[in-house]
Image: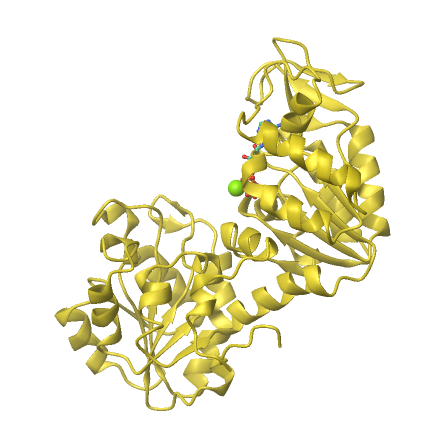
Length: 394
Ligand code: ADP
Ligand code: MG
């Protein structure tokens, strides 16, 4: 397999205590988990460890707390995990330290404990060796199953991996396999659809896939950087200024590459970013002052959908418009339906694109839905992920 790292499948974990870095960075609403996709994605690794009679300690970050913040406690996550596994989950009062060590010593075969939010400790994001040592103290080995956090060199992803025998979890392996296969072994034609807010988030992916893909289809607010670079009026549309020169460079590279770079040919406009705003279909792509482009138009959406339907492999990242606002969701919906119906291999990454698919009830009709936003983009750019690099070689 492409990872080249030791797998949890091959780890001898019986009668051991295993620390598993998971990505339980989930949305909360009224003190409850609003979306448990990431928790469910970790269950295969947890089930494997339980079957093999390990005691399992889980650690994750949640949100961006500045120090301890009870609103970002892992407690609701532990409650949801207990519901999903049907097993009790011990909730640790801290990330590491004496109390945690004492609770860890009490764990029996197959038991589960969830540590507090790793970002409550300032050592997490600093990859502090002392925090890594305290995390490693009560455990025998480490498993990284937090694909969505593996692009960060933090104490729970890299520091602790360097101190213990360390293995890739099942989710991490699947994520890397599916995302790597798109770039390295695509069935052709390979169609890449990119949208969302910012060119700068995705320019690395555009760069790499101009060399690999057969076509790149651009939607979302990103397209306005390209239009600005071409001197086309963008009105009050969201334009990321620093993305404009990057878009210009991408247009130049595309002219020399063996890959088509497609931009929208029509738009849906609104006055403001809200669902009640005045809405207008634009025949073309010029936007006058007082209006903003909030979705791709129907001709664009149909053309993109047709390409997706003819592709051997589809990679989609980033919505086609402001899909959270119903009047501007049509372009993203048409694309999502095309991805769901596509006969080719379909891979979707990016928090908002995955959210859009789920909003339309189409999430179970794609071949791979990535749990990682930033991590999936970095992997697709061809960058090594620190949290994967730190694991022991196979
Ligand atoms: P992902 O999470 O899938 O990678 P991004 O975070 O890059 O996607 O972008 C998603 C956001 O982009 C959404 O909040 C959406 O409202 C916004 N967006 C897309 N198109 C437009 C547009 N034309 N104008 C303003 N915002 C847009
Ligand atoms: Mg996003």
